[in-house]
Image 1 (cartoon, helix red, strand yellow):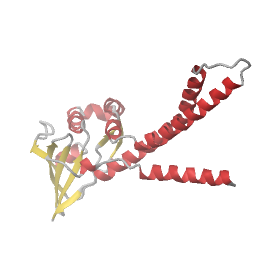
Image 2 (cartoon, helix red, strand yellow; image 1 turned 90 degrees about the vertical axis):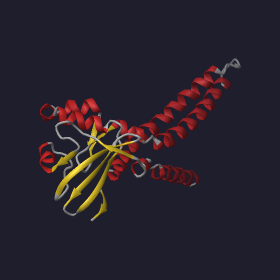
Image 3 (cartoon, one colour; image 1 turned 90 degrees about the horizontal axis):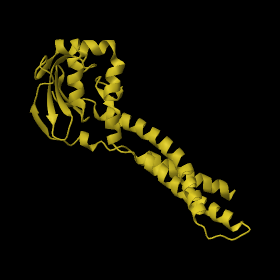
Image 4 (cartoon, one colour; image 1 turned 120 degrees about the horizontal axis):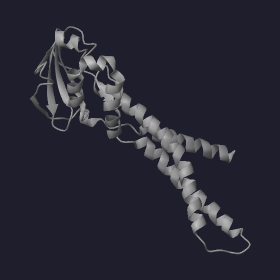
Length: 225
């Protein structure tokens, strides 16, 4: 009965850690815009509706009129979007965002026939609601809090357990030995054994939560009528 209670407590603590290890996307809400710049010579500084449709950019925006791109001081870009319903702003904080956009427009026809190569080149794993690529580099840049939260305790528990097992094996030898190498090796093996599942599942959770956080942070925000 007591063992079940301990198990429930451990599971509750682990679930609390997972829930509260949220990716940090504050840089999507705190930024300094720079001067507007061309996203590509073909388009210039302002994206009109005809260009938007031709290159399949900023999808899902009703009554679109035009958009202007601004580079951000710490990487990425900001988009001022004008529609018949009002003005919106959208943020892309991927450090490679501007380069990816330029490459996409520059090789548009080629990419349509081999999109997989384009995605592999930039390590694109998904797209946001506007059709902008999301890369694994940006997701990794948010950190891996759940990976650490699950992996580190597992490593510590496994290491201590392995050390105890190692010393137990030494004590059971017919000839007493002070050799600590076996205990250390057993501890390291135990640490790896217990840490790997936490790292594996933690990494998976961090990717999913990071992707969800980026998509939410990139949604257009209404600024004025």
